[in-house]
Length: 408
Image (cartoon, rainbow, N blue to C red; front, side, top):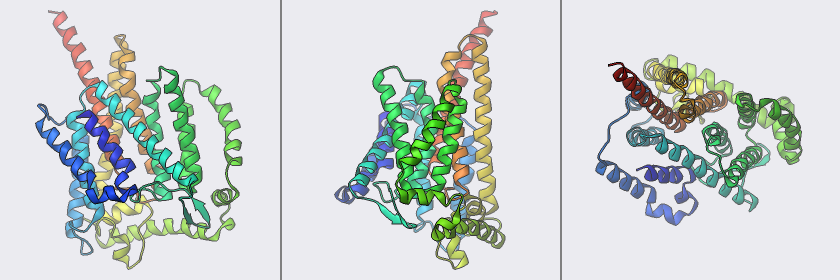
């Protein structure tokens, strides 16, 4: 099942059926998922991991369903966001019932990084071959797929997955491991540069600073960052420099300034939708329809209350609480194991949880300029962290049982 899950991640991230359209006609993603589900049903053990995050995810799924059903602007058969989120929920269930050991978790998280590296590399190759988007007065890199390949979405995905390098760093043993690790970072930097996404560019800086401060070699890395930042800026084409200058000087490009103002408008419009439908909102992706405007919210903190109402806000806050609560439980397990001289056995799971918090913080930060409330990564990282906690709990219980029986 583990390799089936990794295969699904590659199909989901790279989406070859959107790159080569003849594959799309064969609907290989649906066939593959059916095969995976058959394999899952055939597996001997399918017990769902017990974790508080299951309740938060269930409540959010219910808020999506209830809001879609109650909305006068959409329905469950036509709403793409609702249907996509339910598919994400299936993957969440597969991970929570199939990934049991630390070896399995290492394979899945490493597989995620490798799959996304392939996706980035293919996108960069296509960009160098002349495939790009022209928006806001500049050439902007896009992903090779059509669903999540827009410059802003592609750039956000790159940044959100960067913290997943933390657990990968613990597995570096050979030279080609280090080469891949460095190549991933450099390719990520270059791709974010070329997307022209200001939110991804700023969030990338936040992510890199955070990773450096968490590193044991922070005092060596800080000077390297100080030297590398000007080089990254010099490597940018002039058109992209002008694009990023609008972060601190809106007069450089008026269209970019209008785009930034639209984010703030999305927040206030979202609150208006919430006021008009306080319990269940106006429905997923119905922000503009409810206001007779032809655009989405582009602001997470207006999207959730406006489209899912109070029910969605409670579910989202509960999900955020679970990320933090699970991490504190992992810290407790880590402390317990360290006291018994087993510190090394908990570092990988701890790194996965730390990476989860990092990705969540980055998504929250990106939420100030994007409607990313229904992103698949909220569920993916929640599942990874829950599995990591389950693994550490099992180790703690095993030691406690030995200690207890040793007294008798």
